[in-house]
Image (cartoon, rainbow, N blue to C red; front, side, top):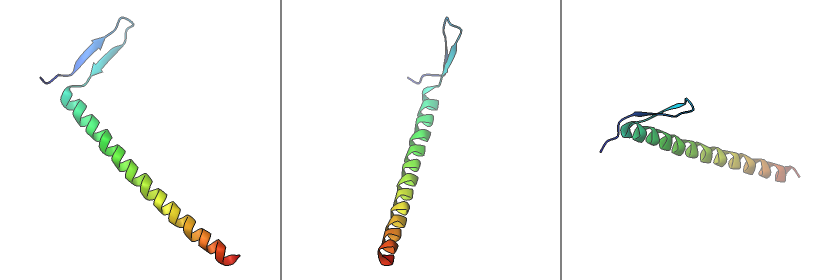
Length: 64
């Protein structure tokens, strides 16, 4: 049972175009992959920042 794209019309004058099941699966996979990629980038940036903070704190300890 593969739903096709369909249009839903409302009395207020708005029309909604709903995706087919295939389009919906592709869209959900795209955003899931994008979300995972973003999480990886964020964790890498945090590690780099923590490393920078560590180097900075060691440098401060040697100066004082």
